[in-house]
Length: 123
Image (cartoon, rainbow, N blue to C red; front, side, top):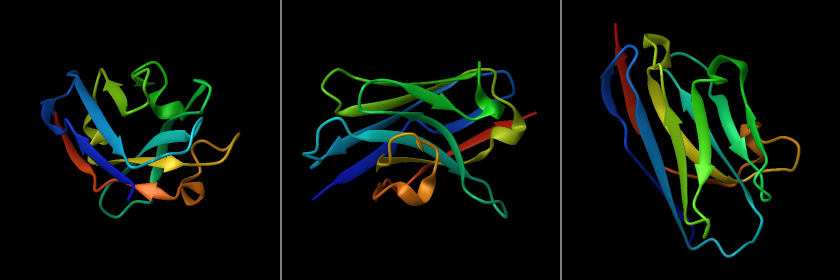
């Protein structure tokens, strides 16, 4: 079955960096879309960065210029490089696979989700 497993979360001071990884297995589709989401306590899930099956990317405004989404050539691992982290970036971070062309940051369009990895940024 399809499995997405995130790693790389942790605690960091404001201004620091983290790199999240999402290992994908069991997904046989080609040119599928993937994205990173986050959810902080008491807040709605937020789409951060998405990458379509052809390598095109999309970012929400709050992370543009700070976060970079990428994937390896074999599309087995998705990454999120996070720089200049802020306390408001504290949340559980999830990767997702599936998605819809042109709506990379729309969570309900994604079929498969990882279990999440916690990111905590202290001031």
